[in-house]
Length: 229
Image (cartoon, rainbow, N blue to C red):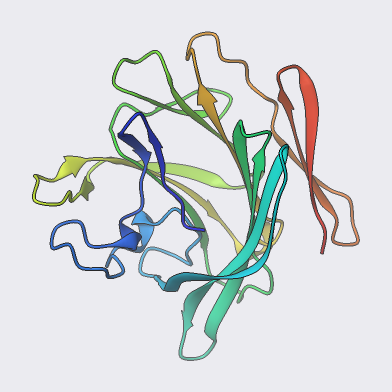
């Protein structure tokens, strides 16, 4: 549930939490903001990157998974679990929704994206574009994050097996606990042509009674992913 995305052997979104790239040891990174998952601030680490899978189903048009990852809140609060919903829509794009419920007051919630290069561009619409080496193709990361604040860091390094440190870009979204409990959505879409790619108008809708919907356009058609409480 803490994901990576590669294209033609090139890493785009990466997560060092699946192993220590410098020594080859399988251990959690000491830097929480390297993980493509929520954290509760800069010093907060996932308690375990091994998710508990609650549900999985697969069909020709949709693959859906639901699981939880634990976050260590501290001695007073123990561990907090967030629920991550992952939709693979028509074998074409990914929709991710994080449920962040019953958050302790006064903590800042982070959502983090770790890109493997420093050529990442954020458009005025908020769409984050990560190109592959030729610059024509890439991946678009579209947030549905009303009320979240965005920041960026480029001083980090990705340690490859036996290689030199590589420059990376980290994009963070920050929110108060009240805003965080509204949830955080992401659409990850391949871009065959960065210049011609159409914004999918990705939105999060809260309908009450715990029902939420994520809507977007795919090949000219409106798609909906439902999140039931």
